[in-house]
Length: 350
Image 1 (cartoon, rainbow, N blue to C red):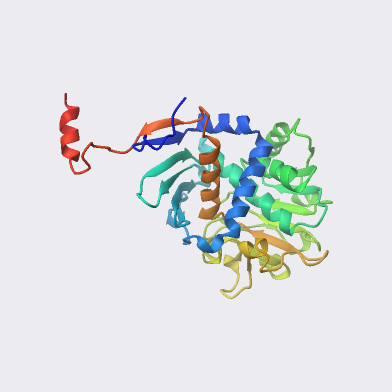
Image 2: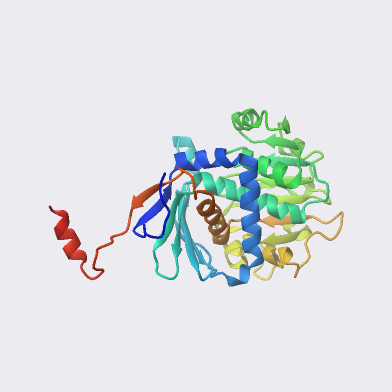
């Protein structure tokens, strides 16, 4: 069993994709989604303690590569993540990621982890945590529009955290819908494959959109949205990429993570700079209102924020203790005399 004792200061715990999957199965998919949601909600409650900046992005015609840093003053974290919609046609993941936590006091890393699987889990956990606060009371049905890599995670998070028992699937690619429906068999949900977006929304109190094309798009038009629903808009996430017609935004109460980032990358990039939004952390700590009426349309314009990744890495750091679901990396030079790095190099020759 690998040791996480402080004496191993030069060794950094690393969670590979294989070990992340083992950890998920060890904890359980739904318990892990619940645990992540709890950690994320706890960090939203102390939102004001964190360093906050829009993610540092390098855009190209093919996609985007981003760094997402934050710190609560004691622990620093960042995630490296890409978004390349064209990858799917080449048999590659649209999104890949890894992340790191470090001790602010000495700058030493304390965890390095894959975050491709973990980001899917934390995104779904965030969606469901927010829906717990904003969705109509007693919501049982979700429309899942876009049945790619996120769809199963989103569905199971809504089940585990919000009590959703029916998911209505739609994707422009029927094979994606078949894949999602097949993967959700045996998870205790009523799964309905739909042929149109409109059909998927029949009877749905929660509407989740998660598409990946890197362009302005109108997945939902104004006439498709009735009163009283909660829209979980998690696709998009870059300049020039939207899913909702702007008239839907005008009719909705819009909730965001961090406005300076969302106004660049979210659905509200279509709106004026003074378009009113509510920051979700304020709803969670009780300083702002969430859902206030049965007919209100609530819209979570989610682009993902560094604090959510920080929360997810914290959860993993805590859950791998006492397990074999990580390996120690010899990542940091640790000479006997901190001033004698060259001497350490010389001795390695023998």
